Length: 176
Image 1 (tube, rainbow, N blue to C red):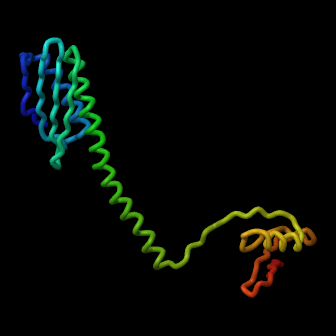
Image 2: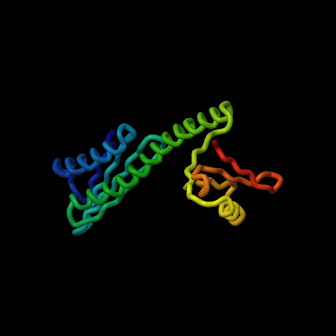
Image 3: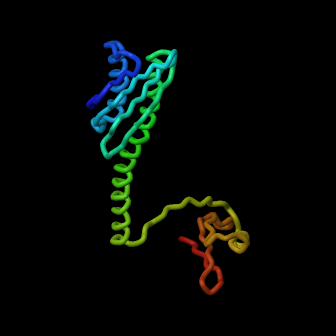
């Protein structure tokens, strides 16, 4: 990242102050990786108040700004850096989410195409198999919204399936 200008208004920019600003900008550069293009920092001193304004230009015509105020330079620089850092993280998440979203869309298209070629899917389900009589199974099928009832026949102790046919009658599947 290129530091265009560190301007001091009513203050002389000393090497320790420049080092403090460079450390803050280095952290911002780590967050944005190589997408940070340039930065301009303005340091202002008004009576007892220290004001730091950071203007960071990122790729894609994005401008991140942060103003920090405090009674010392480290406090003001830290506040400005935190404001820009928050914006940088939000911008970076938009960049990465956009990439993930497009990759996710490509992956979601593949199963849709595979389903069209392969035909219907098999959906597995688990049904509790309870011992009951055939009359109880008929009552359960009549009262509920179930399409079928899988139960253990109380008389023969075998698994049996009861379902409603299209003509309204019941069909009983009793495996041998």
